[in-house]
Image (tube, rainbow, N blue to C red; front, side, top):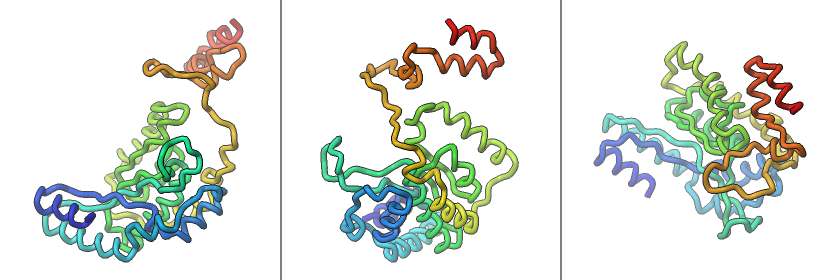
Length: 259
């Protein structure tokens, strides 16, 4: 079904097409190993989720055929990595048997999948990235030749859209200096994938157990709240203090917190 849909889009509709793949392509044993080694051993995944999904050999054959079709049609074809990972819904917060893994832990899984696919295609398969990208790793992802890169979880963390400014500062010099290669640097990508399995940031215990949620309801609109203000016993305006100090207005900053 995936192949026939992509073929239709390229041949009949003349559309550039990227197909989104799942982390299950890595296989149950490897995914389980990565989760366990990084401290996410409590996450429950079913082996049937992997056996019922697209298999590696089938995926490689499909991608080769679709890549050839894209050349014949004069279009572009690639993959989007990756979708979320289906896990057993043990929390009961949402209905249904499954819940979906995203965010930080998805990076070691997705970047490993990207590395393996790039090695298989010698860097010629275009990859769009979306698995656990953050301001801490986006520059290194981009330097491998992977593009475009999208994110969602990063914007839901404290700081929200302001994180985009830091990301832009990191990427703009790279974009301005040179036109990025059309081929993925397989060696760079392999190194990034290997380091992700050892990096403290991707370990469960890196963040600790504290939560940033606030103990109150938020209205549907105008719901922007700084958790640090809510947590402070005297409700000091910490974001404004940081802004003033950042602008060099130290007197006003002191005046604000001593009021």
